[in-house]
Image (cartoon, rainbow, N blue to C red; front, side, top):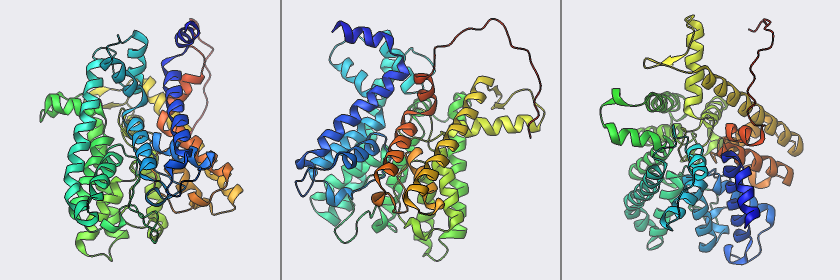
Amino acid sequence: MNTTLALKKHLSPFQIIILGFAGVILLGTILLMLPISSVQRVITPFSQALFTSVSAVCVTGLVVYDTATYWSYFGQLVILILIQIGGMGVITVAVFIAIISGKKISLMQRSTMQEAISAFQMGGIVKMTYFIIKGCFLVEFIGACLMMPVFCNDFGIKGIWMAIFHSISAFCNAGFDIMGSTNNQFASLTVYQGVVWINFVVMLLIVIGGIGFLTWSDILANRNHFHKYRMQSKVIIATTLILIIIPALYFFIKEFNNMPITERILSSLFQAITPRTAGFNTVDMNIISSTGRALIIILMLIGGSPGSTAGGMKTTTIAVLFANMMAIARRNEYAYYFGRRIDNSIVRNASTLLFMYLTLFISGAFIISIVENIDMGLCLFETASAIGTVGLSLGITPGLHLISKLVLIALMFFGRVGGLTMIFATGRKVHHIYGKLPQEKITVG
């Protein structure tokens, strides 16, 4: 007991977050290996169970087995619980359990929670935990109720389970589906391509889960008084709208112009929203042009917003880098949005994240391309999907060898935990330097 307490004192909040995710992944792997988890009642190989567990906890959606036909109801329930924990955050769930069990929340737990949800301050963390838990369950319940009539009409009593599963998966931006059949595996939501109700419910769940809990608390507190919102909330909302509208217009004009108008509008909107980290698809990714795939890769890398159920570099990272570019172009000393200056340390963090994501995304694709001897473009799509915790696939993941799957596992874990969390967890403690090194100029550009 004393050893455990001593270990906790020496762990930083970032290290606790990483260990928390790793522990849930390991437990999920063990449960998925059990014969009761598969339809055929066989022991699932460790590597396949590990891949599925990582994908679920990291709310990615890349799979090696079709979720509907391989996993039993018990296995699907395990996957759904892992998605729920991963979406809300391992630390959020742990803190909530501690609260309802009557335990006092320590300063370390509050600090860890602050880092886990990207909160601005430690004060009000317990209240925010309640807000996240209640908000998640309320939105998922409403989403399930809205989808239930359609699914029950199509699948009978099984439609209740279908509605619950897809509501949680959509809100948590996980992309796991149980639509597959023996003759049509890995189907995702392609069978509902033209169903307006299902499309809009799923899209709303994805967007609500992807803009972040802090943004929603801001919206609920200030309603339609946009000028009262925090700068971050304003940036997230504006960037999210831009990243939906522009890609949707491209898909409508260039990719789906042979479809009937209703399906064309729905498919364009859905494919603009889902790459930023939901992973569902209503059209086969293989029919999209190379230009369309490149756009999807960019959207997958950007991902959702801080403190949300989504992964990726985050909308704020791209927004900060864009603001910095505009500041340089205008010869301004600092980047800004909505009349507020962005600190230079934030710009440095954003630049670091961009470099890390691009390096890992390209390096991972390079390794997979060499190991599997397949086209680099296909590999880039899969690695972007993994590190962005998206789940969209061109169909190559199930057939990959162990080394390639380990690459995707590492990318999924990195994408969900977050680049800065990994850096701060593995880096040395901050050393205050009271002097400065001599300065010398270096030419760039």
